Image 1 (cartoon, rainbow, N blue to C red):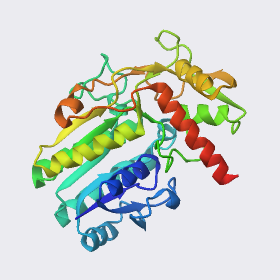
Image 2: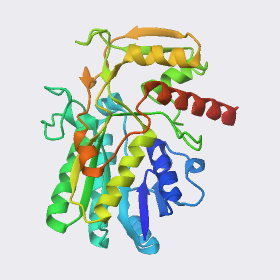
Image 3: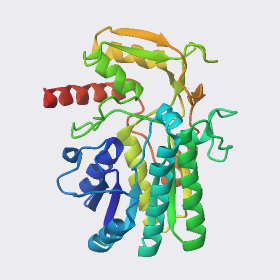
Length: 328
């Protein structure tokens, strides 16, 4: 049987494909390459260029490759962009996901792992935030993902599609073996932007908002290494295949760092100083969000291997240097 990975040429998806191939799985990737790269896909995987909303294409891939599981990463992910272009986000994240889920149900796919987000919580009333806390997104991005969660649960109830909904906190770092990493041009991930600035790819970087109700006035986030996140997906798929029940799980470490703490860590690990400018808040950014992650540990037996901000930054720096050498 085969795993279909949507968005498998992107940042997190390409790490997932490498992990699946390493585990001996057969993998087919569906990606429109709008933000992904064909070279980031593990050579042993098959790559189909196309849209997740193209049901006939998805059905053909499922039949041709005998797909029994789908891991769905493909999405637009930039919160401020979603505020400017909400309908585009609902089309790509919600409408296309609905089409994918329907294609999976029609074809008899049994297992579905969905890439969701902590943005579904909005500004949580308590921290750390738990999976059963209220979901009140503050951006169309968060709303578009929450709508897909609802559709997936309803499809599970109606059609028996067993699924895992994984709510990511802030994903960072790169493959420790240097095979892939965050490669998107003009990316907005804080650690990506900071390492680009440290290595001279950007003349300076901005901090958006210094008046949040946090100790240093900047946003606090729970950063999870991409390799640890990918292992959650692998263990979620194994759980479903072993007959486990559907679940919604936070993916984080349970502690956070402020924007300024992250920048200081990048400066220290890179051994360079760089210019930082302060700007106003961005639309849709919550002040602080940290995961309660006991459920993912108890449900899947997951234990993180890279719960160390310096290690995350070091891997991101190593990948950025490799990427610069590749483009140079």
